[in-house]
Length: 334
Ligand SMILES: Cc1ncc(C[n+]2csc(CCOP(=O)(O)OP(=O)(O)O)c2C)c(N)n1
Ligand SMILES: [Mg+2]
Image (cartoon, rainbow, N blue to C red):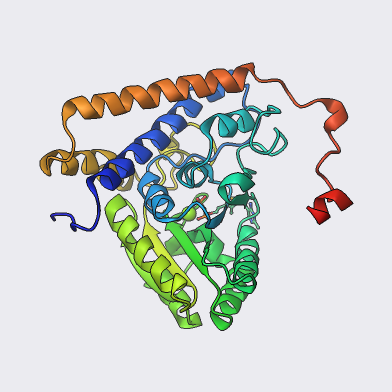
């Protein structure tokens, strides 16, 4: 497929850069995790990078986003600060959540990343509430809700999606369907043949099913969905098919424990979004070997600097441990 002329080469290169950056950051985390300095559970998105960056690049800085336990890729794709994210994972005061949240609780108001939480489905009504406030303010911004296929088994999704549909709220649901909720495949969680996006469509939300390992397909779909939402037509749901490579929680591979077959895993490894897209850009003469090398060198240098920053940053002071727990009057008036 030759890419639509409406997408600039710069955007295509940014999609590749974004995927590589997420992959290398998370591989860096996985390599260092056994050192025991990152004292929080770690859910990696390796394999799922295209879904995050395709949506992240389509969003505007003024748009808002919330996410789940697997949030690094979403935070970075929304424009998050890598140093602040790694410092947060190391529990440092310079972290985006001041070192109080760790990997699963990334918050950064400056970039409209309003929070990620570990309770499955928990951030969905928050994202819908944000969309309600945007609508009341007559803002053109959209609230993006990143969630997994498992969160579609939480009742709160249906209440939230129904409310968003009734009120035509500016919310983009982004469901990364990686087939699994921890060790349970969709086939043991849903009746055979049921499609997630079809369930959501039945509520009255517009939907699209997209190859979540093709960053350009995701980007195009996200742009179309965002236009639909900004035109005031109501919420949109993207189901992005993809696959998690590492264990549900942690830095290792866990194919040996038997919940998924090596054959299935290998099939998805063949669909790795990064070499696929790299080859496309070479074939289309959008990128050459030298530019790729420069891109990779720059990403490696940025990552090393960010790890150094995180490691050398101070821990939060014990006397600050009660700060930020309650909104005080000054905060409310701000
Ligand atoms: C309400 C709730 N139930 C169960 C859990 C345990 N849990 C943590 S992650 C997870 C799987 C979620 O699957 P999915 O939404 O598909 O996200 P993925 O891990 O695949 O990215 C579960 C069941 C939880 N954190 N919260
Ligand atoms: Mg899942």
